[in-house]
Image (cartoon, rainbow, N blue to C red):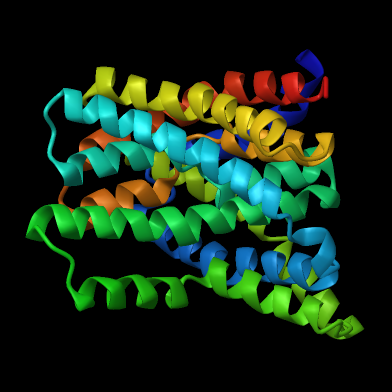
Length: 309
């Protein structure tokens, strides 16, 4: 575990540097927002497209991996929802808590970190897990919040879901790359160099942006945030492991990658959703802050465990 911890330490060091920059106001919230936008729309999209376009489609798509990851994520989502209902929370608030418990920071932390630790062969499984999060659970949160507030779903809700998916650069870059790969189109050298250079900014930029954004997070509702962090960092990878090892068994390497993907801390976009809808934003903020801090220890532990596969 010590070796894995040392290998992950530089990633968290960059997050820490970003946190210092944000905390001291050397990097303002406006600057953080612009950096995040650059990484999200340009650098990370270039990285995802290049990986999807240069990998054979048959090596990327794995229905059993999707089923196993979806099963494990949905199970944790259900547990968090049940706990919220036992506390007599309404549907929209329960949905935000479930999103905290089951949706990790795969794009900004998982993809850059695990691509380095496991190699480029890990990109396919990571992208499949990321696609499940973006397509299935990003749609589900909109349905639950809208339905819980209005008591029924309207055509506008589904238009909102469709528009959101089409405007998400990660979904579009993965889709475009997969189409490119399925058509067996070669990537010209100049385009490959362009994508490599631009995508190279994704890892440091994303990690720095995570840290800078954490400086603006609060640690209110600590007990609830601690439960949500526990669900995300411990329960999620454990149930995904159950899904991809026993229920929908896949090869050991892909299982190790997707379990490690599930071990990522709470995704930053959960706070954006909570703030947008005005539902428990402080709870989501605290869950992101606490889970990211705790993941310094939990991620190396999970990766060391899956290394035994």
